[in-house]
Image 1 (cartoon, rainbow, N blue to C red):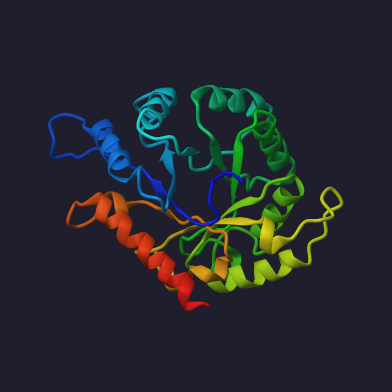
Image 2 (cartoon, rainbow, N blue to C red):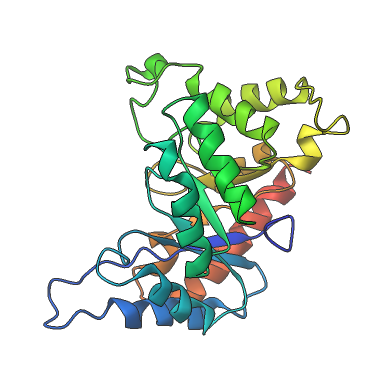
Length: 260
């Protein structure tokens, strides 16, 4: 299991340049987010995106995070895993050497590409979280998008067959989630005959808040879920990051209790 507990939150440290400041203070913001929340029991890890490494090296960012927490560091590059699979091994090596613990991968290019990238990351003993469905409007063809309606389902299932158990899924697509979880229960794995979708698959819900995902629907993800939360915690209206994290965790637990 990538994170220590079956339920927690992952704080997305997507800090951006404040154009009103003369100096770039993003690294200070990053440290403040972690120091304000690291000792909160319900925080399971931190996600960093390519927003910071575009200016600073990934290794430097990871070092700053790990100097302030012992919790897991998850890297999300956005469209990671879409490119030439011949690059997979070298990229996986770079990520391992940077110090990240896990990577969010979005290999929607097809099963051959997905397999190479997933295997490369697993071989480097990196955690793999697969993104297939999206929280944005008009993503798949059912919703007037470009991606085939079964593509993201096939991607998730192929990833599970390769050993992945951690899936990122949009919290604003609850009906899709319910039907997908039902299909997973019927999935049979030759590589793992004891596979139990309800017990083994761990979800990382996204899109809670301004994208329409609701905490009251959290129980639809089962008892193992780690919502990835960014601005609701890192940029709250009152600027109290710690209080925002505590409020979110309390609301999350209430969402689970409502389902009991």
